[in-house]
Length: 175
Image (cartoon, rainbow, N blue to C red; front, top):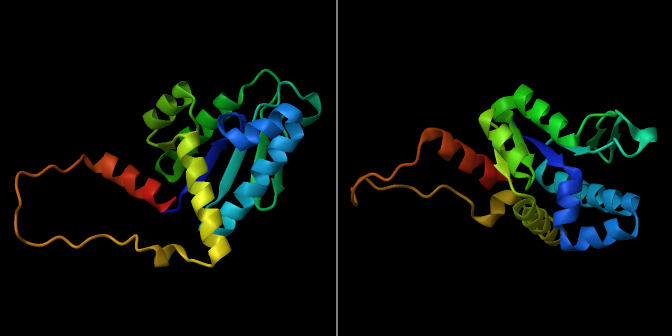
């Protein structure tokens, strides 16, 4: 099953220490740097990525949808928040969606539609790891992220998490 990343653009920018500095200088600079970092991440991980930005405060971008560096960029329409667009996408994609946001309302709504949720701070760390790996030429398979083999010997009572939680953990681990 393919994972599709849906990113709350301004939430990620404003939660990131380095991107928020650019955002305070000029809004466009923050967006461009985020898209540049996501393009690097996409080269390493090859997931389809959609970044959603609020377009209500920029009339020239209302409802626009473009591709930049292989990343789908969506601006919400007038009177619509980016949060609503993200929730709608999570509703349509369900288990295939991984939503990146630290907005508690969006996280709750996405989980309600069985999408996986990753906080903006956690995803930024994963982007940095992927960037370092790509600079050093390390493939994701070389990092030793293999499932450990379980022996047949029992070591106590079962502490297995519910299946839905285990599936979400596997999807997050692949990021």
